[in-house]
Amino acid sequence: MKDEFLKVAIEEAKKGYREGGIPIGSVLVHNKEIIGRGHNRRVQKGSAILHGEMDALENAGRLPASVYRESTLYTTLSPCSMCSGTILLYGIPRVVIAENKTFLGEEELLRSRGVEVTVLDDTECIDLMRTFIEEKPELWNEDIGEENEERPF
Image (tube, rainbow, N blue to C red):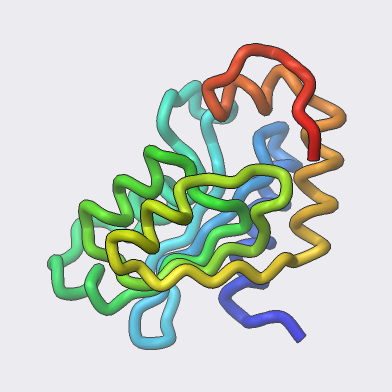
């Protein structure tokens, strides 16, 4: 059975996919309550930085440092360098990642800085990302800052 917070992150990812964007969702949880949720909206907003994690943090609004330091970030895909940097900047101590098969972000950096990283290998998220990457490889490569080239799973 899936964690309730992961389910919400997946809902966000699917929402982004339905909107024509990249299917990555995220939620920020504090004291067992979602305080921010979002999905990758780079396409929808014409944004250079609005990844799923960044959208969830943005939607949480300004928070005291103590809240971040007691929170967990759930994300459907391994966080990139930008999102990992934000996790480190705000001192978020725990990150739950649905999958890292289609993209391996900065998990080792996070661990090296004391962040507790859990990878769930969620097949629903793996399948969703693989489908998206096969359908829109150019958009995927743009999102991760790569040239359009074949990416093995």
